[in-house]
Image (cartoon, rainbow, N blue to C red; front, side, top):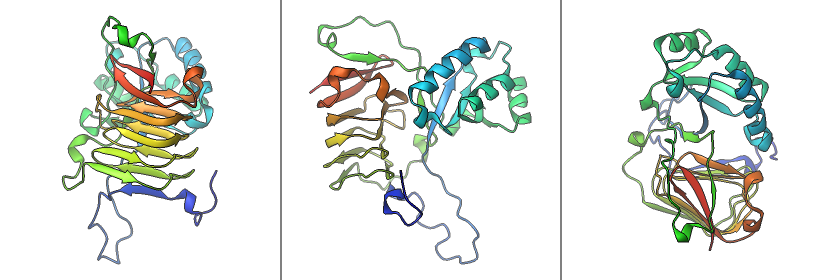
Length: 277
C-alpha cells in the first residue's frame, strides 16, 4: 500500500499537534512521551460461552480481514462481571483471528488480577474507553422507513478522553487537497471538511461531523470523543469503514443501492442510519 519511510503517502497528519514543548530544546532526550489519539476496538463481552464467541468472532473477522488483522482490542468485562470467564481462552481466540489483545476494562478484582498476570493492561474508565449502551426500544417514524440501519457488536472507541483535549483549537478545519492512500488526518476538536476525496487506505478522524465534497474510499471516524450527534456526509460512498461515536459499519455490510451515492450517516438509538442525499 505504501512505500518506504520516504514515501510521502505514508505520512500521518495531526491537526494540530498536541505537544508543542516536549523535547524541543533538550538534545539529550532519548524520547518524547506524549498523548495521541488512536483507534482501538472494544470487544464488549456478553456471554461466557467461548464456543459461541469463537464462531461469532470468526464471522466478524471474516467481514473485513484486512482491517481487523493486527488490530489492537480491549476486552470489556462490564456485562459479565459476576460470571466465570475463561480469559486465557478468549485471548487465544482473539489472537487466532489476528487481533492483538492489549487490555481489559471493568471486571472483578480477580479478573483484573488474572489480566495483569497475563501482562494485559487494566484500564480504568478514565482511560477513555467507551462502549455504546444497549439501544432502547424505538418506534419507527415515517421518515425513518427508508433508512438503512446497522447495529454493531464490536464498537470502535477512542484511546483519548475528551478531558485531555487542548483548549486553543479552532472549531472547524478545512482541507482543500485529497487525502491519499496511507495518510491519516486527525483533528482534536470540531468538524472536519474535506473539499476533495479520501483515498482507499486513508483515514480521517474528528470529534465532530465529517463533510466530504468528493468520494470517500477510506475510513472515516466521526464523533470520536463520544459525540452521538456527529454525522458523516459524502458526495460518493465507497468507504472501507465508517464510524460514529464508536458504532461502525464495514464496506461488506453497506447496502448496495447506496454505494456510489451521495449519503449522510447519523447515529440514533445505538444504530447507524444511512440516508441518500
